[in-house]
Image 1 (cartoon, one colour):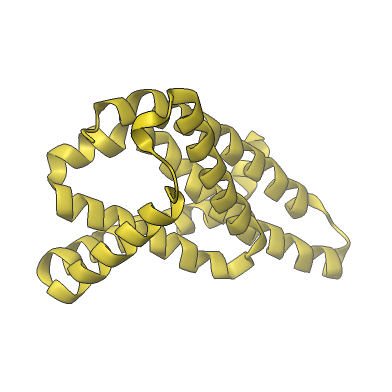
Image 2 (cartoon, helix red, strand yellow):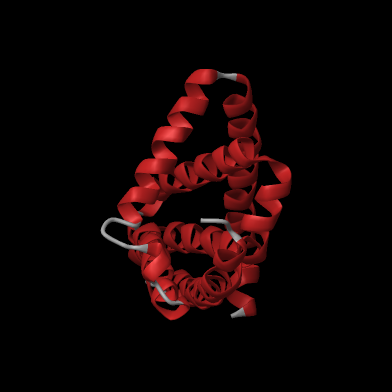
Length: 182
């Protein structure tokens, strides 16, 4: 696992850089431009209503909430893996939504509501995006050199991402969700 991360550190670093740079740019745009704030509002509430469609949050126990969060995170994870280089678009949407949450709710609430699970979920997301890129690079390398090393690396990194999403989902449903006022 460590070797897979080391061999692909440049890709993972680049994806991390794009994520955090876009987070900063989007935070600036959302906080200084009404159009981007309104766009963030629309995307955030559409995203939220799509995930929670037909779900009564107050009636959910922590385990049911965990399964809902985990299901959504794993869908994003697998979509990121199979969408190849288009997964950068998924990364930008996620970064935009997170930037909107920061601007809308402020730094204090952002830290309280996002930090407990976000310190694990954001790296899981970055690894999922990276694994998708690594997979497609691996396919090209296989066609050229008949080497499956990068494809195997991508699966190892995807596996690590899934493990982190499982942990983050647990923290989000059993801890973060309980401190957010409803």
